[in-house]
Length: 352
Image (cartoon, rainbow, N blue to C red; front, side, top):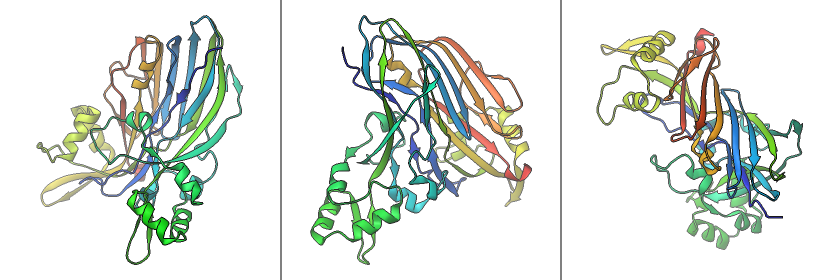
């Protein structure tokens, strides 16, 4: 029986939200992607039904194995690298006390409608330096150098509780501290403080067989926790340093949506200039991983729930239709994604 080396259900590219000029109080969080086949030339995605919300992400697929022999391998759902130093310096969309619990995103999966047992493990990596031009998918394709064995050999816990990591680093012999510092695993300052520089990837996985000539339904869901923060809008000024202008381009914020944002937020005036204040969430979803399957997606359906009727949604996508007070739908046939999804959801917490 040939082996399907692995089927990755990747979710969520994690990043601590940088503090731009008009969003100076942010928190890190998780974004998302879908199932990714590493070696499955004979597996077609007949359909994908994707739901993106502020609280939950759900995906349901129908796959067809067109080969002559069964394929068996691991289905892997890795969360993105979560940087420990970032957790030390910034708030996070998931409470810190939950981050070190097993399956802290509440990941569940079903195969042909039956819930399956999912195993969990963790690895540690040293990520590449931040590059805003690096594609979202790079955190899944090449998350960084694996340092799991090095940490385990020195009894450093693979924990998202950075206080545990710091305590373990401080307890290391000086020779090992020097090795960690030279290898970029940690920074030690003159006061004796320690700073872990690695990131943790939590992975969920199970063994799956794709029967020759048969369809299989795979669905999974997990907690949505997009990054976000305080949001301040002003009319775009133009120029390379115009942060609002960069948002207009990235999220296709047309004039009508700009007016809706102003209406939704709280207006304030200062130095003769108008500002509108509120909150924003930035939910990114890597669609282009679907191109690893055989052929296009037969039927693709995207449902977006913006959370509250008063929230404002903006994204770059054709054919979007409003279907309810908070929901929007996009449907396509024989769909080959050529770009990833970037969602901006603006809210006024005081209006709820």
